[in-house]
Image (tube, rainbow, N blue to C red; front, side, top):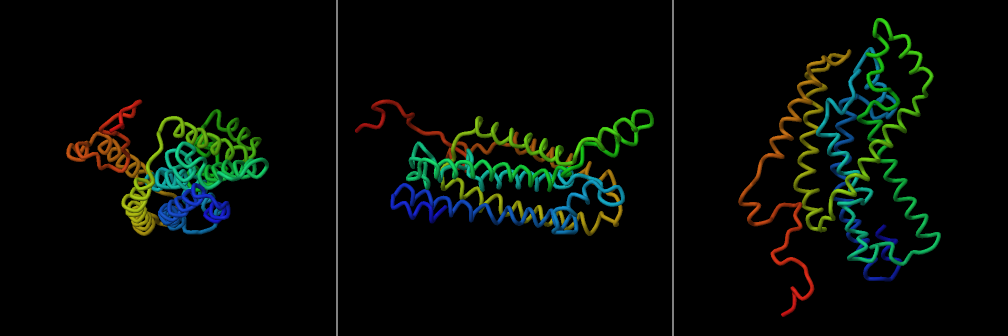
Length: 275
């Protein structure tokens, strides 16, 4: 992206390319540390083995989203920033940089680059489904198949539906979340994006890695997870998230120095900024 902006010989594309390089650097490290936490928890760097660990009846048998809700949130946020979608699309902000690093591209070149953007977004959704949502396993597949009366019907249904369908359905559902976020949130300034990545996501990704190591070493005995482990992790994470939402730092609100903030002292209106 940087070289695409630099090669266009345009100041807006160069600025967009520099912003893109800085943003990808700030969010690539938390993303990789989060994926490392998934590998530690699953005991493998192989994606197929990571999925098998989530859906296996002899080991694991718990989706990683219930064991690593913080990791799932970090992966989602960093992937949105990696594919440069709102609220992290300042490198290609059409209102400020005239489409950023791809200003000078048009026709089929612009179409191919735009298609690549959406392919990256969908690839991110597929990776999330594989790492945290059990991959090609249907929701509650083993529990529904073991039911006394209707278990055979569910088992037959799951055998008829290919695993690829479940992966695509989960990815499409997550892509709908991407679109929802794009329609709900506004663009964040470049300095706030970088501050959010380095000061908040990087320490949280390290914390997530520590939690993954602790769960793997202290609470996993080689078989299935004890049900209380994902239950406790999920409940504690939900309670902390609610507390964070309810917490308000009055001093920070007065100074307006939070990383996600677009309020202005003087509202923009015709003639409001004239001397």
